[in-house]
Image (cartoon, rainbow, N blue to C red; front, side, top):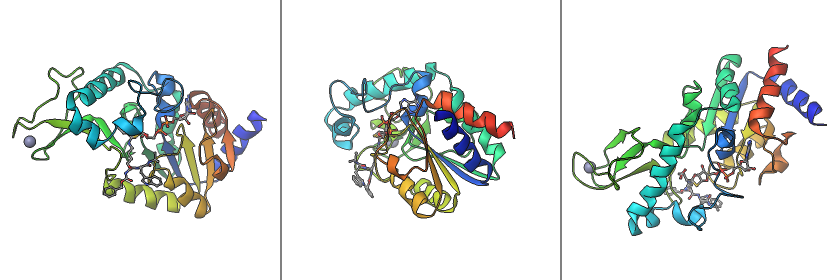
Length: 247
Ligand code: BJW
Ligand code: ZN
Protein backbone atom coordinates (compact mmCIF):
# COMPACT_ATOMS: atom_id res chain seq x y z
CA UNK A 1 0.00 0.00 0.00
CA UNK A 2 1.29 3.42 -0.97
CA UNK A 3 0.15 4.95 2.31
CA UNK A 4 2.11 2.31 4.24
CA UNK A 5 5.21 3.15 2.19
CA UNK A 6 4.81 6.83 3.05
CA UNK A 7 4.52 5.79 6.70
CA UNK A 8 7.66 3.63 6.47
CA UNK A 9 9.59 6.46 4.86
CA UNK A 10 8.51 8.84 7.63
CA UNK A 11 9.40 6.27 10.26
CA UNK A 12 12.93 5.83 8.88
CA UNK A 13 13.40 9.58 8.69
CA UNK A 14 11.99 10.24 12.16
CA UNK A 15 14.63 7.96 13.64
CA UNK A 16 17.46 9.61 11.68
CA UNK A 17 19.65 12.63 12.31
CA UNK A 18 22.06 12.22 9.37
CA UNK A 19 20.12 12.38 6.13
CA UNK A 20 21.19 12.87 2.52
CA UNK A 21 18.89 13.69 -0.39
CA UNK A 22 20.25 12.82 -3.84
CA UNK A 23 18.27 14.35 -6.67
CA UNK A 24 18.01 14.19 -10.44
CA UNK A 25 16.03 15.79 -13.23
CA UNK A 26 12.74 14.22 -12.08
CA UNK A 27 12.60 16.51 -9.03
CA UNK A 28 12.21 19.46 -11.41
CA UNK A 29 9.74 17.74 -13.77
CA UNK A 30 6.71 19.11 -11.94
CA UNK A 31 8.19 22.61 -12.25
CA UNK A 32 7.97 22.12 -16.01
CA UNK A 33 11.56 21.19 -16.92
CA UNK A 34 12.13 18.19 -19.19
CA UNK A 35 14.09 15.18 -17.94
CA UNK A 36 16.91 13.71 -20.03
CA UNK A 37 15.75 10.18 -20.67
CA UNK A 38 12.40 8.65 -21.47
CA UNK A 39 9.52 10.29 -23.33
CA UNK A 40 10.43 13.81 -24.51
CA UNK A 41 13.94 13.33 -23.20
CA UNK A 42 15.70 13.56 -26.53
CA UNK A 43 17.68 16.51 -27.77
CA UNK A 44 17.22 17.24 -31.49
CA UNK A 45 16.80 13.52 -32.13
CA UNK A 46 20.06 12.59 -30.40
CA UNK A 47 20.72 10.89 -27.08
CA UNK A 48 22.03 13.14 -24.32
CA UNK A 49 25.11 10.88 -24.12
CA UNK A 50 25.98 11.88 -27.68
CA UNK A 51 25.56 15.63 -27.27
CA UNK A 52 26.54 16.55 -23.70
CA UNK A 53 30.19 16.03 -24.48
CA UNK A 54 33.33 18.08 -25.10
CA UNK A 55 33.53 16.62 -28.62
CA UNK A 56 30.04 17.88 -29.49
CA UNK A 57 31.04 21.36 -28.26
CA UNK A 58 34.27 21.38 -30.24
CA UNK A 59 32.43 20.25 -33.38
CA UNK A 60 29.66 22.84 -33.13
CA UNK A 61 29.78 25.26 -30.18
CA UNK A 62 26.84 27.33 -31.42
CA UNK A 63 24.58 24.27 -31.68
CA UNK A 64 25.49 23.20 -28.16
CA UNK A 65 25.05 26.75 -26.87
CA UNK A 66 21.58 26.95 -28.50
CA UNK A 67 20.60 23.92 -26.42
CA UNK A 68 21.94 25.44 -23.19
CA UNK A 69 20.58 28.91 -23.94
CA UNK A 70 17.12 27.35 -24.33
CA UNK A 71 17.59 25.36 -21.10
CA UNK A 72 18.63 28.57 -19.28
CA UNK A 73 15.58 30.41 -20.64
CA UNK A 74 13.30 27.57 -19.53
CA UNK A 75 14.89 27.33 -16.09
CA UNK A 76 14.65 31.10 -15.59
CA UNK A 77 10.88 30.93 -16.20
CA UNK A 78 9.94 28.16 -13.79
CA UNK A 79 9.53 28.00 -10.02
CA UNK A 80 10.55 25.44 -7.42
CA UNK A 81 7.80 22.88 -6.76
CA UNK A 82 6.66 21.30 -3.46
CA UNK A 83 9.43 18.67 -3.66
CA UNK A 84 12.12 21.38 -3.73
CA UNK A 85 10.33 23.15 -0.86
CA UNK A 86 10.21 20.04 1.36
CA UNK A 87 13.91 19.33 0.75
CA UNK A 88 14.74 22.94 1.64
CA UNK A 89 12.75 22.61 4.88
CA UNK A 90 14.60 19.41 5.78
CA UNK A 91 17.87 21.31 6.26
CA UNK A 92 16.28 22.65 9.50
CA UNK A 93 14.57 19.37 10.44
CA UNK A 94 17.67 17.13 10.63
CA UNK A 95 20.83 17.91 12.56
CA UNK A 96 22.94 16.84 9.56
CA UNK A 97 21.23 17.19 6.19
CA UNK A 98 23.09 17.26 2.88
CA UNK A 99 21.46 17.90 -0.47
CA UNK A 100 23.43 16.41 -3.37
CA UNK A 101 22.08 17.13 -6.83
CA UNK A 102 22.91 16.18 -10.38
CA UNK A 103 20.73 19.07 -11.54
CA UNK A 104 22.07 22.26 -13.07
CA UNK A 105 18.85 24.31 -12.93
CA UNK A 106 19.35 26.08 -9.57
CA UNK A 107 15.81 25.30 -8.39
CA UNK A 108 16.98 23.81 -5.07
CA UNK A 109 18.73 27.08 -4.25
CA UNK A 110 15.62 28.93 -5.46
CA UNK A 111 13.62 27.00 -2.85
CA UNK A 112 16.05 28.11 -0.12
CA UNK A 113 18.45 25.15 0.09
CA UNK A 114 21.94 26.18 1.15
CA UNK A 115 25.25 24.39 0.63
CA UNK A 116 23.83 22.31 -2.23
CA UNK A 117 26.45 19.91 -3.63
CA UNK A 118 26.15 20.36 -7.41
CA UNK A 119 27.83 17.33 -8.97
CA UNK A 120 27.21 18.29 -12.61
CA UNK A 121 27.78 22.04 -12.39
CA UNK A 122 25.29 24.81 -13.05
CA UNK A 123 23.51 26.37 -16.02
CA UNK A 124 24.21 29.76 -14.44
CA UNK A 125 28.00 29.52 -14.58
CA UNK A 126 30.07 29.93 -17.73
CA UNK A 127 33.75 29.17 -18.14
CA UNK A 128 36.33 30.43 -20.63
CA UNK A 129 37.83 27.70 -22.82
CA UNK A 130 40.97 29.86 -23.18
CA UNK A 131 42.00 31.25 -19.79
CA UNK A 132 39.64 29.21 -17.58
CA UNK A 133 37.99 32.28 -16.03
CA UNK A 134 34.63 31.34 -14.54
CA UNK A 135 31.73 33.73 -13.98
CA UNK A 136 28.09 33.70 -13.04
CA UNK A 137 25.70 34.86 -15.76
CA UNK A 138 21.92 34.84 -15.37
CA UNK A 139 21.08 36.54 -18.67
CA UNK A 140 18.70 34.40 -20.70
CA UNK A 141 18.70 34.39 -23.62
CA UNK A 142 22.33 35.40 -24.03
CA UNK A 143 22.87 38.34 -26.42
CA UNK A 144 25.46 36.48 -28.53
CA UNK A 145 26.21 32.80 -29.13
CA UNK A 146 28.77 31.63 -28.34
CA UNK A 147 29.56 34.10 -25.56
CA UNK A 148 33.17 35.30 -25.48
CA UNK A 149 35.51 35.92 -22.57
CA UNK A 150 35.93 39.62 -21.74
CA UNK A 151 39.47 38.90 -20.51
CA UNK A 152 40.96 36.93 -23.41
CA UNK A 153 38.36 36.80 -26.20
CA UNK A 154 38.13 33.00 -26.35
CA UNK A 155 34.80 31.17 -26.54
CA UNK A 156 33.10 30.49 -23.20
CA UNK A 157 31.36 27.21 -22.44
CA UNK A 158 28.54 26.22 -20.10
CA UNK A 159 29.77 25.49 -16.55
CA UNK A 160 28.33 22.00 -16.56
CA UNK A 161 29.96 18.56 -16.46
CA UNK A 162 29.79 16.67 -19.74
CA UNK A 163 30.40 12.97 -20.38
CA UNK A 164 34.07 12.09 -20.07
CA UNK A 165 34.75 15.08 -17.81
CA UNK A 166 35.66 14.89 -14.14
CA UNK A 167 33.12 15.92 -11.54
CA UNK A 168 34.20 18.77 -9.22
CA UNK A 169 36.57 17.10 -6.75
CA UNK A 170 35.27 18.99 -3.71
CA UNK A 171 31.69 18.03 -4.63
CA UNK A 172 32.30 14.31 -5.00
CA UNK A 173 34.41 14.21 -1.82
CA UNK A 174 31.66 15.99 0.17
CA UNK A 175 28.95 13.78 -1.33
CA UNK A 176 30.82 10.55 -0.58
CA UNK A 177 31.54 11.60 2.99
CA UNK A 178 27.88 12.48 3.54
CA UNK A 179 26.48 9.22 2.12
CA UNK A 180 29.02 7.10 3.99
CA UNK A 181 27.87 8.65 7.26
CA UNK A 182 24.13 8.94 6.64
CA UNK A 183 21.37 6.83 8.17
CA UNK A 184 18.89 7.56 5.39
CA UNK A 185 19.48 8.37 1.72
CA UNK A 186 16.47 9.75 -0.14
CA UNK A 187 16.95 9.25 -3.88
CA UNK A 188 14.59 11.51 -5.81
CA UNK A 189 13.89 11.66 -9.54
CA UNK A 190 16.98 10.09 -11.04
CA UNK A 191 17.29 7.17 -13.44
CA UNK A 192 20.58 6.39 -11.60
CA UNK A 193 22.45 5.43 -14.76
CA UNK A 194 25.10 8.16 -14.82
CA UNK A 195 28.30 7.47 -12.89
CA UNK A 196 30.09 8.28 -10.67
CA UNK A 197 27.04 10.11 -9.22
CA UNK A 198 24.80 7.00 -9.21
CA UNK A 199 27.52 5.16 -7.30
CA UNK A 200 26.57 7.17 -4.23
CA UNK A 201 23.48 5.00 -3.80
CA UNK A 202 25.57 1.83 -3.53
CA UNK A 203 27.97 3.52 -1.11
CA UNK A 204 25.08 4.45 1.19
CA UNK A 205 23.49 1.00 0.98
CA UNK A 206 26.81 -0.74 1.67
CA UNK A 207 27.34 1.51 4.69
CA UNK A 208 23.99 0.36 6.10
CA UNK A 209 21.80 3.37 5.29
CA UNK A 210 18.12 2.97 4.50
CA UNK A 211 17.60 3.99 0.88
CA UNK A 212 14.24 5.58 0.03
CA UNK A 213 13.51 5.88 -3.70
CA UNK A 214 11.00 8.53 -4.81
CA UNK A 215 10.23 8.05 -8.48
CA UNK A 216 7.14 7.13 -10.53
CA UNK A 217 9.33 4.56 -12.37
CA UNK A 218 11.91 2.10 -11.04
CA UNK A 219 15.43 3.49 -11.36
CA UNK A 220 18.40 1.30 -12.32
CA UNK A 221 19.20 1.03 -8.60
CA UNK A 222 15.66 0.45 -7.35
CA UNK A 223 16.76 -2.92 -5.92
CA UNK A 224 18.86 -1.07 -3.32
CA UNK A 225 15.83 0.74 -1.93
CA UNK A 226 14.38 -0.41 1.38
CA UNK A 227 11.39 1.89 0.93
CA UNK A 228 9.89 2.82 -2.43
CA UNK A 229 7.56 5.73 -3.10
CA UNK A 230 6.24 5.12 -6.62
CA UNK A 231 4.87 8.52 -7.48
CA UNK A 232 5.81 12.06 -8.42
CA UNK A 233 8.14 13.76 -5.95
CA UNK A 234 5.96 16.87 -5.69
CA UNK A 235 3.14 14.70 -4.34
CA UNK A 236 5.12 12.11 -2.35
CA UNK A 237 7.57 14.28 -0.41
CA UNK A 238 4.89 16.58 1.05
CA UNK A 239 3.03 13.46 2.27
CA UNK A 240 6.15 12.19 4.04
CA UNK A 241 6.83 15.65 5.44
CA UNK A 242 3.27 15.93 6.76
CA UNK A 243 3.82 12.76 8.82
CA UNK A 244 7.13 14.14 10.13
CA UNK A 245 5.53 17.44 11.09
CA UNK A 246 2.59 15.59 12.63
CA UNK A 247 4.85 13.77 15.04
C1 BJW B 1 10.33 11.74 -11.63
C2 BJW B 1 9.30 12.58 -11.92
C3 BJW B 1 8.66 13.17 -10.85
C4 BJW B 1 10.02 11.89 -13.77
N1 BJW B 1 9.07 12.90 -9.61
N2 BJW B 1 10.72 11.48 -10.38
C5 BJW B 1 30.88 3.59 -14.60
C6 BJW B 1 30.09 2.71 -15.30
C7 BJW B 1 29.59 3.03 -16.57
C8 BJW B 1 29.91 4.26 -17.16
C9 BJW B 1 30.70 5.14 -16.46
C10 BJW B 1 31.17 4.80 -15.22
N3 BJW B 1 31.89 5.86 -14.75
C11 BJW B 1 31.89 6.85 -15.68
C12 BJW B 1 31.18 6.42 -16.75
C13 BJW B 1 30.97 7.23 -17.99
C14 BJW B 1 29.85 8.24 -17.87
C15 BJW B 1 28.56 7.48 -17.58
O1 BJW B 1 28.07 7.41 -16.49
N4 BJW B 1 27.96 6.91 -18.63
C16 BJW B 1 26.73 6.12 -18.50
C17 BJW B 1 25.57 6.91 -19.07
C18 BJW B 1 26.95 4.82 -19.22
N5 BJW B 1 30.13 9.22 -16.83
C19 BJW B 1 30.86 10.30 -17.08
O2 BJW B 1 31.36 10.52 -18.17
C20 BJW B 1 31.10 11.27 -15.93
N6 BJW B 1 32.47 11.60 -15.85
C21 BJW B 1 33.40 10.71 -15.50
O3 BJW B 1 33.13 9.60 -15.13
O4 BJW B 1 34.67 11.21 -15.57
C22 BJW B 1 35.79 10.35 -15.31
C23 BJW B 1 37.00 11.24 -15.32
C24 BJW B 1 37.81 11.26 -14.23
C25 BJW B 1 38.95 12.08 -14.22
C26 BJW B 1 39.23 12.88 -15.33
C27 BJW B 1 38.40 12.86 -16.43
C28 BJW B 1 37.27 12.04 -16.42
C29 BJW B 1 30.39 12.61 -16.20
C30 BJW B 1 28.93 12.51 -16.24
C31 BJW B 1 28.31 13.89 -16.58
C32 BJW B 1 26.80 13.84 -16.81
N7 BJW B 1 26.35 15.07 -17.36
C33 BJW B 1 24.92 15.27 -17.62
C34 BJW B 1 24.76 16.60 -18.39
C35 BJW B 1 24.96 17.77 -17.43
C36 BJW B 1 24.73 19.07 -18.11
C37 BJW B 1 23.33 19.23 -18.59
O5 BJW B 1 22.38 19.29 -17.78
O6 BJW B 1 23.14 19.32 -19.81
O7 BJW B 1 24.20 15.29 -16.39
S1 BJW B 1 24.15 13.94 -18.52
C38 BJW B 1 22.60 14.06 -17.69
O8 BJW B 1 22.35 12.82 -16.96
C39 BJW B 1 22.77 15.14 -16.64
C40 BJW B 1 22.08 14.54 -15.45
O9 BJW B 1 22.52 15.16 -14.26
C41 BJW B 1 22.46 13.09 -15.56
C42 BJW B 1 21.53 12.16 -14.80
O10 BJW B 1 20.23 12.21 -15.30
P1 BJW B 1 19.00 12.14 -14.30
O11 BJW B 1 18.98 13.33 -13.45
O12 BJW B 1 18.99 10.83 -13.64
O13 BJW B 1 17.79 12.31 -15.33
P2 BJW B 1 17.03 11.17 -16.21
O14 BJW B 1 16.29 11.89 -17.27
O15 BJW B 1 17.93 10.10 -16.62
O16 BJW B 1 15.99 10.54 -15.18
C43 BJW B 1 14.89 11.26 -14.68
C44 BJW B 1 14.17 10.39 -13.68
O17 BJW B 1 13.15 11.15 -13.07
C45 BJW B 1 13.51 9.14 -14.27
O18 BJW B 1 13.85 8.00 -13.46
C46 BJW B 1 12.02 9.44 -14.16
O19 BJW B 1 11.22 8.26 -13.92
C47 BJW B 1 12.00 10.34 -12.96
N8 BJW B 1 10.85 11.24 -12.88
N9 BJW B 1 9.18 12.60 -13.35
C48 BJW B 1 10.13 12.02 -9.44
N10 BJW B 1 7.62 14.00 -11.08
ZN1 ZN C 1 39.35 33.89 -21.16
